[in-house]
Image (cartoon, rainbow, N blue to C red; front, side):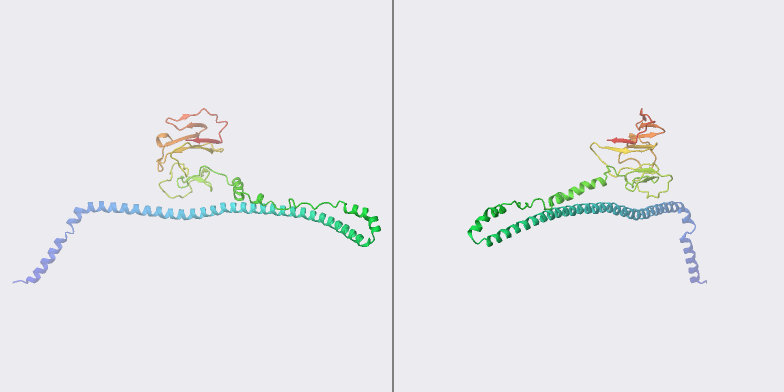
Length: 315
């Protein structure tokens, strides 16, 4: 006889140990699990990378929003300053006209006042003489002299002509006139560069109207899909799909440039040749030689000793 319960217990322990297959199963599926785990880890790293890009883009947006807000305020302050100066100048001209009109009216009133005094004096004298000459003989003796005095030319009052302010001159098309004058301080730029496409090595002007190559790659820009990198390119903000277009580009004293038009599908994240097959139609200056970037390149018979400062681009 033996203790069956103890035997059962040992048996169950043995069965539990065998059922877990601690040694056999992991060995058989380790490779598959490692492969799946590797995929998950790779996906996790991609999520982390995209998350960092979003965080960087958010910081970039905050910084650029603040910078753009400052620029907007500066531009509007220029307009406000112009309007304040224009308002002051127009009010000064109005006050000047008012003073001049009042001066002219004052001079006329003074002249008429003197005429009125002389006229009143003559009237008083004639009335007194008419009262004094009671008898007919004396009246007849002084009649001719008195009549002559009534005929004396005291002049007629001046017409009220020109003393009123020319209101129409100051108010006619006022807003349009000021707006037209404002055009002289608000130059129009037909092409605005798009900073979201600009390579980090390029430096755009605050007004997004000019670009130059930075001395070193110090700009930290979000790796958005629209951005050129590593090619030193940038696009205009507004595109077109039809019609005839023409721009004048100032290249200044630069001895290394490429300008032209690009299709929307041009590659951004890898190097390429600026040629029609890549969706670019450009002119360039390299090593003192002007070229049309065709396939193959077409050398243009232009004299580098007299470099161009402006290039006209048309499509």
